[in-house]
Image (cartoon, rainbow, N blue to C red; front, side):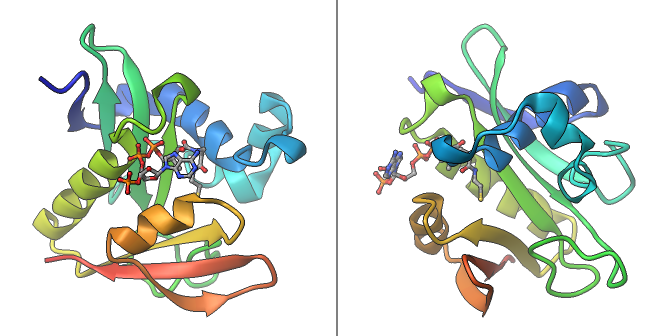
Length: 163
Ligand SMILES: CC(C)(COP(=O)(O)OP(=O)(O)OC[C@H]1O[C@@H](n2cnc3c(N)ncnc32)[C@H](O)[C@@H]1OP(=O)(O)O)[C@@H](O)C(=O)NCCC(=O)NCCS
């Protein structure tokens, strides 16, 4: 039996999403910022501010006790205030994070797949994200069907189709 389960994210998950946003922002151990500093950075906090807004959706991985261990969620950004992984209005941008003790056990992949299903059920045809090329997470995204559509100095914008 799988040691974790996936459920839809709800508005009460805001605090946990903030935790996972910190994990995503601090993925590189040589460049870790304190929680408060990360959350005060509007280019980061925009991924969770006001959660859960119309159009927001996501999935939470929970352990056998129902404790959240990972999250992936999508949010829409307008063209005049694009996120790092913006490709077009109406294409949700994803954020993904898993508690460090729970990594490399399939949680991240399961969350990506769950969110793709949610997006398809909501009528979206694409999902996007931004990932730094040094982050192994990019290999996970490639294996889940994401392709690079734009590249910056250190990061790529990736997109996948959902049905
Ligand atoms: C990226 C992250 C979400 C992946 O979640 P995860 O639950 O560890 O991923 P999974 O267990 O589903 O593993 C997915 C694949 O990555 C591989 N992988 C896992 N940990 C790895 C590591 N440390 N180094 C290299 N590959 C790794 C797995 O082997 C797996 O591939 P496989 O299915 O072919 O075996 C998680 O590591 C994390 O939260 N990292 C910090 C936050 C972050 O970087 N977020 C993404 C920002 S763009």
